[in-house]
Length: 325
Ligand code: UT7
Image (cartoon, rainbow, N blue to C red; front, top):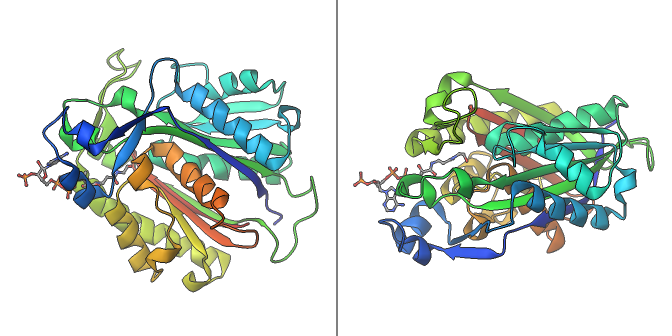
């Protein structure tokens, strides 16, 4: 099966950095507790005029520049977010308009922290079946706008940001080749029975309010380690590789201890795990593409590398994709 390939990436962060020390002036917490339990040292928080769409647009422009393309080349935009600018229309259509892309397909995907994996897999399917030729796949969030800023068990964990990739269909530049770049295997899962462990207590059809994020952290933690290890093994088996062939894991950045535990289960050393949770905290759907762009731009992820992306979040939803760069 021909597969689509990543030809560019970009990211965007709000201007304002909030350190753990500043968080400790808002709720009963400390830099020591946050670093020890999560690995987070700071997060970026959107200010006036910064929204999910403005961050997404900046990340998308950076990804287009990186790929050497213009908006006219894009005929598909899939945007993963749990914090859209408006209930409707899809934030993807705002991005489409701002970039000046005309026609084509644009829609949002709601799978919370796994959203980017869901968006990537959906875009890959549309590209490989010929529905589109070049896609922007974006993860963008302003989680600060759905946090309960008086709940220390959640408000210290999240941040805002956006990441984007350009994904091109196999027949645009040159045909897929054995051992060449492309999305090699992907798996997605959901389990709606776990709704109450991680959810937002509002919405248009229930409370007519935006609501706040609620999480039973320790229980989510246990599910995350088990589900991620399981989906990673599935993708490794589907691709017919062994875990020692993986050059980089680009995980969802929820908690450094989850990253470490998942890598240990796969017998992958910490030197092959991309970690940005210390800088960005948990940016939900934005965290994987933000981490990916960081590691590409600083030269860690190189052409030819085998990269595993993985994420798990509210729903529960979880998934992983193996990509040859
Ligand atoms: O992105 C979606 C997926 N999300 C995740 O994967 C998150 C998964 N969960 C986690 O990352 C961790 O469970 C947390 C970071 C949320 C919590 O870490 P933990 O080690 O599981 O701590 P805990 O909830 O068991 O709390 C330990 C103690 C409690 O006090 P007592 O009962 O032992 O006296 C909490 O009240 O730490 C207390 N605590 C805090 N203390 C200072 C909870 N939050 C804070 C805080 N500052 N911010």
